[in-house]
Image (cartoon, rainbow, N blue to C red; front, top):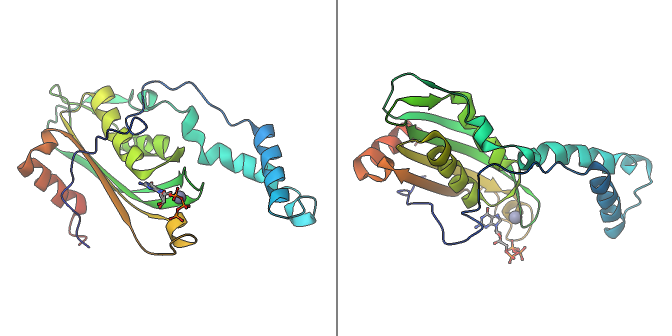
Length: 215
Ligand SMILES: Nc1nc2c(ncn2[C@@H]2O[C@H](COP(=O)(O)OP(=O)(O)OP(=O)(O)O)[C@@H](O)[C@H]2O)c(=O)[nH]1
Ligand SMILES: [Zn+2]
């Protein structure tokens, strides 16, 4: 499979350029989620009081706290871990496993994210794990893949002051695999490129490191 040359991931869709500064914590309302799942089980013709389902509303509500935990997390906080190592060249973390939930069907999509950036001119970087945490902050929300890609790139520009960033996400959407069009195995690839990485030579170097002999 070949990856298309990434284009600027910016979009005219206001949803895609949604404000990513400090978010007001939005904790899952456990009791409300529990009641909604019980109601949903009734709606599909199930008996929520049968033995196998009795604890399901509670389990789903607890799972939602993890799956949508990103709604109460602040990307600014993740990127507050920073230090200067006087490095002004490309830094890439690739193959970051990503699990998210499609906002159209509330079904999972999963795959890998690759994040590369050129630090700010003063050589300030963030911890490598923070790039993966940043991906999770945005993935653990009801999402579309394009928005996660855009939000990760913009967070690095806005809150780490990077000179350039490239984000590529490859994922399989279960809403396309197990229902609807029924195309298991199809992969959606999205990219966002900002700043110096929009230069064709720098972008080409980043892409070859990012895909690192995988294809
Ligand atoms: N662009 C984009 N589309 C997505 C994403 N996740 C799911 N979708 C699509 O959202 C669309 C919703 O289309 P609708 O016609 O409103 O819903 P639907 O009738 O369930 O569509 P089908 O999936 O084609 O059965 C579908 O084409 C999905 O494939 C995503 O991350 N990005
Ligand atoms: Zn979907």
